[in-house]
Amino acid sequence: MTCLAVGSVPALAQAPVTYSVVIPAGEYGSAAFLGELLATLAAAKAFCQSTGDSALQVDCLSERLETAAGGIPEGTDYDEVREVLKDTSQRLKRLARQNSDPARGRVSVTSSANPAERTSRPLIPVNSAAQAAVNLEATRILDEAATILLRSAEAAQERQTQYAQIAAAIGSNKVLLRS
Image (cartoon, rainbow, N blue to C red; front, side, top):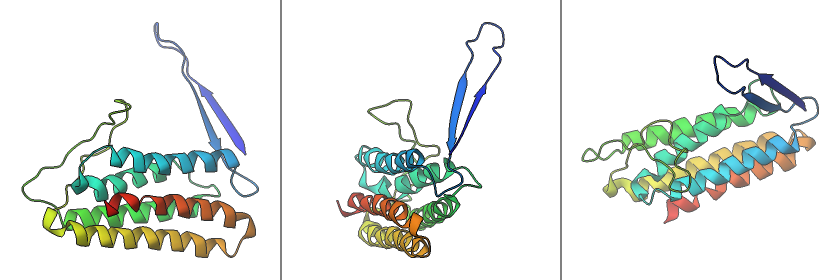
């Protein structure tokens, strides 16, 4: 594991800011980074559930997976996970866009628990008439992502446990689509 700390020189009377980034390297990914990723995926479910709007769930999951993928540094042991999350996010976004509700506009969402946490882009509401079919397709997309991770981990023993945990975290988001 490599840890990088960067401090900034204060401009005028601002307090210095220090950023710490944990980058998994060497042996397969760090347990701390895995824990952070699993927490991010669990928080995605909680965040999307807190919208209280079932029409937003598919694109909310897309946006949260996109955010999770963006938090995985390139050139690490998690490159494949990042790519699976990005692909899954894009597929969910496309699904929501193809089935959008023309009567509703896009919506930015802020967490009720943490007002500083918000979507990085406005979410696309799904047409209520298509919602059951869209949720079924979104569930299939999430299943495919989990399967890809599980299959790719078969070749490397050190990845099996970590990929299985990530696949389970992705799969746990299907609960949102069943309600």
